Image (cartoon, rainbow, N blue to C red):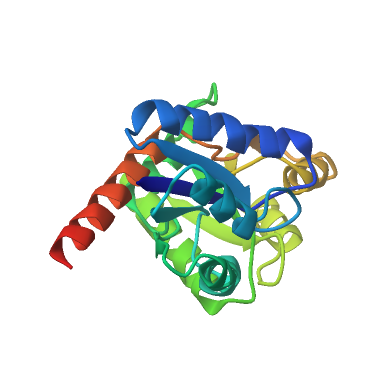
Length: 248
């Protein structure tokens, strides 16, 4: 019997954990697989090994792991595989296959545009976008965020898209805000490239409130959240993993 194990980042913030749980409930309604469970990489329970245990307890013989992560960094490359190895040792006969984070995908660009369009003021030729990534010591993170920013600029025709990061990479959030504040753009659309609410969103809000008064209009967009478009990406992953199984 097949199961899906959704792996969220995890947070100490209850609202963030609840967002992940509500998203998985929507996935269950859209995906016809009998066993579907949620677990977390860190900061919340159940952990990944316990998530696999729960699938097996319900009769799973094959577990498809879907990382609910935006980009491939340390969690996707190291933490999740390490946990799945431990789970495999506990359940040697269990087949475990692992999907990939959402990554640089056209659907992710569309989600950003959806979040920007929620603002009362539209993008125009006097606007810029500041895309804020979480940041990581993994070099692929900056490459991927830069690729997303480039595609976002192409798709919106906005004159400028800049990037900054909340941790581990430069430009930092402070540097990104300072540069945008010094620019000649009349409107700055700030887009947190985050999947869930929590401390990082509060940090962005606090930094924006502390900016010096300027003639610019600042528009803080919602974080990406567990957008309905992500279910389509998951369905596509499941389809490709099922085809891989048939071709094996």
